[in-house]
Amino acid sequence: MIGTTFRETIEEDGRSVEMYGTVTDYQQDRVLAMELGGKYNNVEVEYRLEDMGRYTRLTMSSNIQFRSYLKILSMVLWPFFKRKLVEQLNREYARLKELCERDTLAVQSGEGNKGDAGYTQRR
Image (cartoon, rainbow, N blue to C red; front, side, top):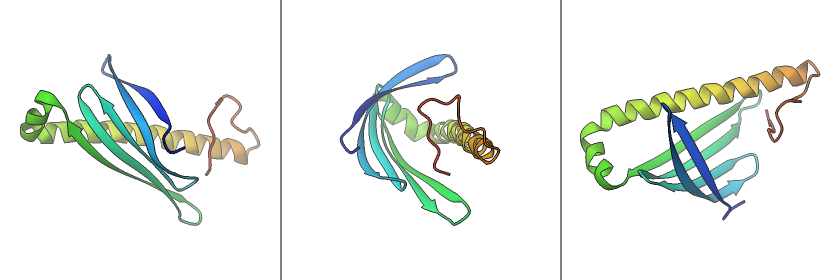
């Protein structure tokens, strides 16, 4: 719910970074927005779900502000940073799609989501 705080550990290429976040907006089955802060950057992100009839559209909007020396480097190396971020997001969306489709197929076949404790699928 709005005001909930959390800690997130992001691991990539054998390195990990902790970020601390706060939920800034929540509308069940429609919107989840949060602010995250970490050693290297601050992020504002919003996930929005739209019922498209047979499908659900997920839209993510974000604003990333780098800290310290990365702020200067990001101005020069933005194409590199952007490519890395897009690659990371593509991997995350592919995994989310895989999970949603797997569970949709399992539910249709009567298997449910037995092995995914804490995972709830809307559609």
